[in-house]
Amino acid sequence: MRALRRLLADHRDFRLLVSAGLVSMTGDWLFGVGLTYLVYSITGSTLASGAMVLASVMPSILLGSLAGVMVDRWDRRTTMIVTNLLQVVGLVPLLFVHDAGTIWIVYVVGVYQGIVEQFFGPAEQAMVPQLVPEEQLLGANGLNSQIRNAARLVGAAAGGIIAAQAGLRGLAVVDAASFVIAAALLAAIRFRPAARAPEDADSLAEHASPGALARLFAEWRDGLAVCARSLPLRVVLIYVAITSVGEGTMGTLFAPFVRDVLHGSGSAYGFIVGIQAIGGIVGGLYVASAGERWSAYALFGFGALAFGAVDLALFLYPLALSGIAPALICMLIVGVPGACAMAGLMTTFQTGTTDRFRGRVWGAITAVQGCALLVGVGVASWLGGAIGIVPVIAVQGAAPVVGGLMVLVALRGTAARDVHPDEDVLMPETEALPSG
Image 1 (cartoon, one colour):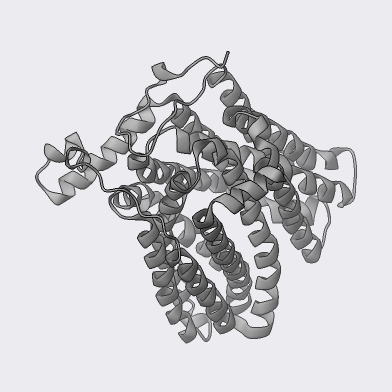
Image 2: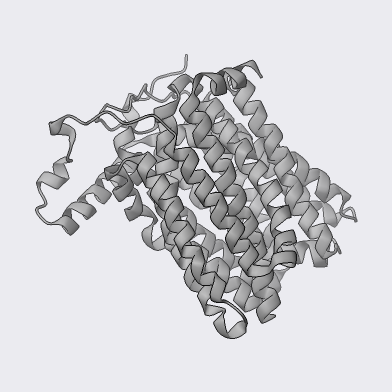
């Protein structure tokens, strides 16, 4: 706890960043859960609900990587403020949704919000290493994980209540208020990036490409080159691809798993989903306060292994036991290693490149994640009915196990180079140092 208090006490701008994240993400969860409920209530169609998922995922696939290029050109603080305000504007059309005939507005808003989010995510993740020293990055990412789970716990519960009591307009107003508050907190951040030296302002690829569009794609290729030359970043991308297939599978089959395999009610489903956030808060608190005892790679790999093992227990126990109590226990526990793995992954990403390329690299990670999620959804939709729910959803547990083993084997005996934001270098894998 002392490390956590020191982290928050010593870094005012980081406190503002995580506070803005807590407010904004609570609004996101509140809005997402409530909107899914209302879309189904208005249309009575599961296809309509599935279209909402597609509308939210497609922008990350089509735009995520290129959005990261633009974020690397812009001031991250300003980018986050503007994207929050643009999100407010994007919610206004929801005030005109009245029935199934106007439900198309919801999809347009979903795509718009997804597009804007592609610029916020890379800016936020790239800014964390600018606000805390590298030796405190793991703790900072652990706290971010804790914040995300707290937002999920509060927002998911509030979303259903507000949707039932105030409808779509109420959801839009509350979510808009969360974006305004987040923008105000971000505006209070004092940090300003140092101006780049003239020779660092443009990449070599930019000098070779006269047109604006050509420069955009040249910078995009620069970001891919960073991923290709850095062993830790390649591992992160492969891990995200593997585990996102599992996440897509779970997102498609978890409700049928609770209903048809565990024989649980709708309220039981909501409770099982929400309780994972409690474990995530505990895990985030541990990383933030004591995570410095671990290397980022070890926390990443062992956290993923434990996460996958608990998930496998969750999906396979119905073969021998009945009832939902074991599911509740597993979902409570799995949040702890999940938070550890995420903190390790984020730190590996942040130290695996320089500030100049972080937006592009995070954009590439986001695009890979979106593509893999769609693969998981397709596989689950096709095979779930053909071979049964349990064998297919077990992929969600097997994926982190495979990914965690890959992390531990591939990054064993390596340590990220001390990369500073003002260094304009790539980190080839040959620069990895033995841990001793």
